Length: 130
Image (cartoon, rainbow, N blue to C red; front, side, top):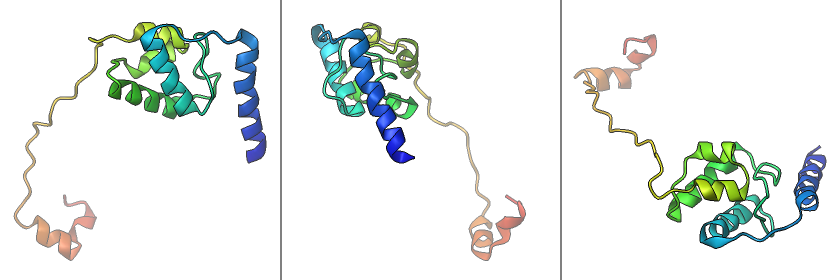
């Protein structure tokens, strides 16, 4: 079964090149994104009109791609890859001032009862007391 899946994924990657043909990335951003995709997806080359998901991408790899893009100084939201899955569209969505959601620090105060450590050591917290 695993060999069938691997063969199926390889055929999908090869078919993506046959259907559209290869057109090299244009510009600094497209080239950088293409290099990231090639590395993450394990393909030799990525063209301007290639679709991330047709090349074998999935949600976990999408997160990895976005993280690598951020490390390279390209700000883009992970949702953009699902909405604009081709290289050209994603490169156009890259913005130096993208709307990145920042998570504020947790300001909730948590008090630990003085006898909590003793109860944990004694196994008394299993009953849902805490």
